Image 1 (cartoon, rainbow, N blue to C red):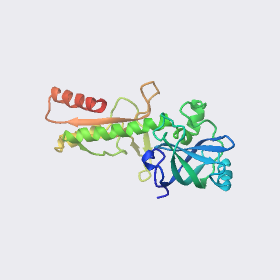
Image 2: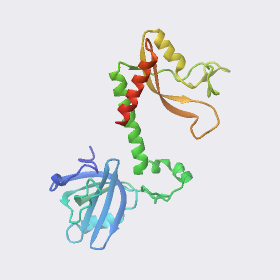
Image 3: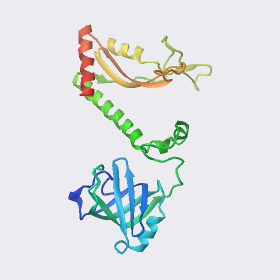
Image 4: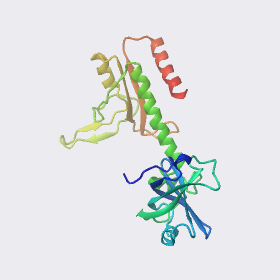
Length: 260
């Protein structure tokens, strides 16, 4: 491993330990006698400190050359902060830097990698890989991941099984136009991308799989609306040998489980 800890992990009980961190330079603050660097990864931010007369001048000079979004590896000793930051989980400590290695330099980003960025929608979509570094966007992806894991836990507890159904299928009558994919093996023939796994889950019911689900991608070739996109993800389920009340109880239970 290139690191001993993440940037959201260190606490006061780590004071005195020598650690190695890796991440992106969020910002630097140079006050002359002391230089601070905020080092970021997806787990959080850790403050690095380089003080005149304490850390070596060679390392301090190297730190002054770091720009925003440089990827660096840093080794140093964890120390208690003089001025603590209650808004950060790592706000009680800082790392006194002994060694810096630049893993990858970076050009100045076209917008600030901050919660409140100065980049418009088009600019952020053009540089999506930079926008994904921002905390609000990262939190959305992490929430989506946790929701998907919770859905699987709940439905598994209700005796559902997750089955992945095919993506390249025959065109079936649905509520919108199909996206089509030409077949290389059969010139002039086309596959359709599924608008839903309806046919396959009915096959599963006939086959005796009485409780099925999957978190599935669906595709519909229709005009954009506020609540419609050409590609979307849905929690797809099917049950057999049940009545209306059974279905309501099962999926009301799922909603309660997700939001409790």
